[in-house]
Length: 507
Image (cartoon, one colour):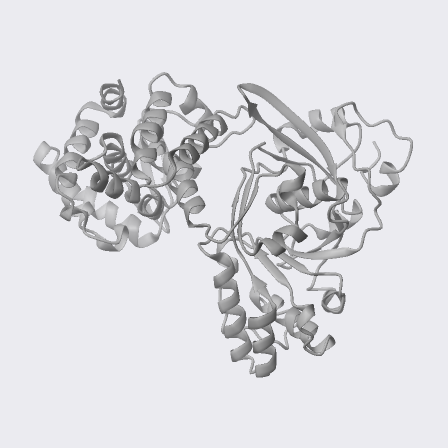
């Protein structure tokens, strides 16, 4: 089969029915520089710019920069920046699949071998926007980074070098400032990126005029992204390629749902009119409510339900949602306890909650519960604990199932043995691995090693666990009734098993 390329796209090749092909010119100018060539950005941001270009509302393409030495820009360039995107999921209860050839990327640059080419982009007046997704650890200050490095090691270091070259090239022209929209999953990512850039500028002793230009004439916007991207479909790639009829080393897959919340001025939204092509992009002056909604409902539902479902014996989120008992458990947690705990517009919350339940049921996504258990303690603190505290503040009562979810989380560490930086735990006759910060694993291993298998022992274990303010950010024993109820549920789990305990809980 022929390789996907501009040559193939412009030939008389017979593409399969139902495949959306771009109809705009490949000669559009480069207007965006993007740090990151991975699955998420290609299924999210690059897809959005593709949609804009199809309607003639942006008329620009993306230069992709590989943020680390090893990456995909070689494959991207081999395919002229083209790749096939399959978006799949449920819409109104029906399975839907959308196939498109994405054509928004002009080329890829590896700064480790093409540093001067990378800097030349800084001198291009058409490039106005910076997009990034370099993992949560990507936006950090590296004191060992140097401007003289070609390239600097960190993403902020590369960006600072880029901005300084642009500042010099255009002699500090205020109109040549950039708009940075990071997509890394950290709170207030734009603010954090700006702080690191300015810290690097100071460490590198760059001119004060450059610092002033960065602060006054460049925008660092906070953003929140939401789409499950499942990436290259290894298990079904041969079937997909047979249906497509051509070779594509960069086939990408994701869910239909998408949301991008950008905290920034409407003037930038007018330059990036995503909403005019029907995309779920929100421009706002305060993204806090949207972040609260996502973290508490989407992420919180995962974190609150997965320990119980996994110890029940299930393997995936889809299996959990289809289960007669666990499916009700998840829905009740969201509708009866999480949504009522959030003091925001209830219509906005219930509509989002309905979309979350539908997304959890997506038959195309195999989301394994064991992967969601990764770093569960910190996730619980950020995603579930606020709902427990707020529910009690608003109602005067503890939320039943969210309280039970805390006991289920503690039970997941039972009988764990720390080996290296991981914990080996038994689920029935099967061994599984709990991954968390080493000090957390060691704490829970020691806690359960001293467990006395009685109701009083379960209460004592719960009290000791809840007292660890390093994990939860506070001593949870100070919340009236929480330790007693958690201990009671913990004893039920230990004595009767997870299945019997959950079956009793769910009505």
